[in-house]
Length: 470
Image 1 (cartoon, helix red, strand yellow):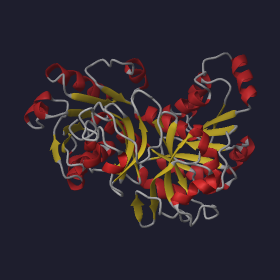
Image 2 (cartoon, rainbow, N blue to C red):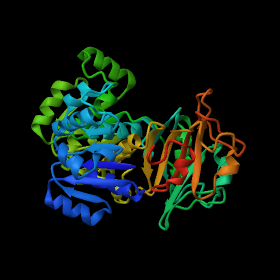
Image 3 (cartoon, rainbow, N blue to C red):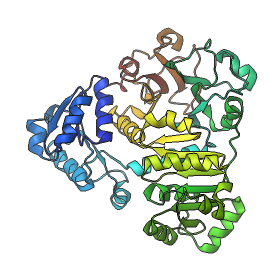
Image 4 (cartoon, rainbow, N blue to C red):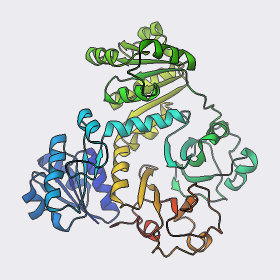
């Protein structure tokens, strides 16, 4: 698969590196000499210093005529959208993805079919807000990857007080009554795809496939914490992401009447505080939202926190544009007694830092948007991709092609331990997911969810449509 990426920002470099590690043919373009120099030192791919929205550059230097996809990641939304439109005139079959940050553009263009020649439009703020909301919906027990069909992968950290320390995975069901799968395990020595003989240790990070109904009990066994619904929530950061989260917490009812808002809030017993030090952000938030308390102040000021009662909240969500500030603010509120905290971070590289600070969930902004892009780049048979363990594994949801060599074969005949783990399956005519067993027989059109090492093209290719070049 050949992909042209225009824009060597952090996201562009991370996406290019992921694709290059998979042996895809990647061309990265940027007009900044410094960014080009940095990219050449970091990635084994073609890096060009030029204007990436120039069709002549794309044709002459980047070879767009032989490419499979164009990803526009410049800092200018208009450039990203117009470039897709220009390329679409000559190359309508090329997959074109644009990053669009502007709220108005995204809201007016997000409906399908997309205008301006784009096949996909991705907004980092929307993706990040969605990831934060999933963590809230599932009780703030860990990062959440929604797999569809009522299933998700929840990341737990095994507490030193857990009843499951020393227990083999094949014996977990007898203790917990849960009959799901552990998709991956990460400890100080690295990350693995576990099997039934794998024993749990204190401080292991595990990804568990479960339904929403199982998470509360699992959280108790893994970490000793409950997953109760928070009633008093403080959101730090009144920018775009914070506003999106407040909308979701309110049930997208920001425009309802004050009386109706108050009655609904009282009926569910919840209270939301939105905090920012920027007066303009606070003023706009007060005009936009009803039924919440907008506070303009310093989230690190102990007197401010005490006077407003923020230390008595059940959940703190730090989603300001300053990632370092988010970590500090979440850790500080945690130290003052807030039981659950979520922090928006730059990437998965900060997961360990967040854990050491006592933060319950760290949502990696850059990694979230890269996962969304990879989901589109893997072809029409792939519905979602989630990278875990600092990008070492990928959880992929895709369809089984009728031409796949798996059709008519049983699971126990085709999957090798340690290389790939099948997590969920669904026959096309049934529509609901289930955890597979060894006698499961593949049919064309089945939907599957599996985990494999990033960059290993063999497992995706087995399904005939989810591999590179699809």
